[in-house]
Each structure stands twice: as structure tokens, then as C-alpha cells.
Length: 119
Image (cartoon, rainbow, N blue to C red; front, side):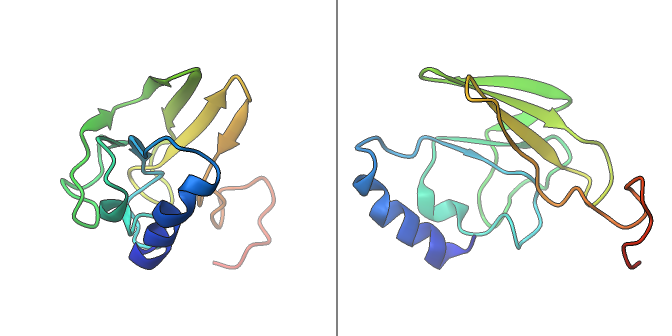
């Protein structure tokens, strides 16, 4: 996401909900996944402990070391540090009770059981 896409999301969110954006969870701090957060205006910003002090100008307010449960309304967000790999601050997120998982950029060369990805 970037600032333009984040602005579009914020401007159009009212089409599906009247609730404001209150929480932002960074999967990791790489620019192709962590841009535009300042546009959203979230009060709680979660990132893994190894993430930089600011991510695209946004300072995380919640630092996850290994795991953390974040409860927002009737949803529980299970944040899990994935260890070093594609980055040093990768988080996976499971949303309960829907059991929806968000994992970003985990497939990397020589990290999967098969080794046919280019290096």
C-alpha cells in the first residue's frame, strides 16, 4: 500500500462501515508493504519488536516480541513473530473467530521444502 491507496481506502471505507480505523498492524517494515500508514490515523499501531523506530513516518505503539493477542470488539487478532527470514520483523496475523490468516512475503528462495525458486 502507498499513501495514495491508503487515502482511497480511508475515503471509501464508509461504503462498508461507519467505524473509524483504530488499529494498524504491520506485517513487516519493507516499503512495498508498509507505506501509507500515516494517512490512516490509527491510534494503535502494531509491529514486531525488531521493526525500526518509525515505519514510513509512523511510530508503532505496540511492539510484539513473540506472540500477542489484540482484541478489537468481537475479533481477536493473534500476532506471531515468524523469526528472521525475508525480514527481521515479520508478523503473521490470524483473525478469530473467522480463522483467517495473513502471511506476507514468507515464501523465499531455499526456505521451502522444494528448491526450484530462483536465488
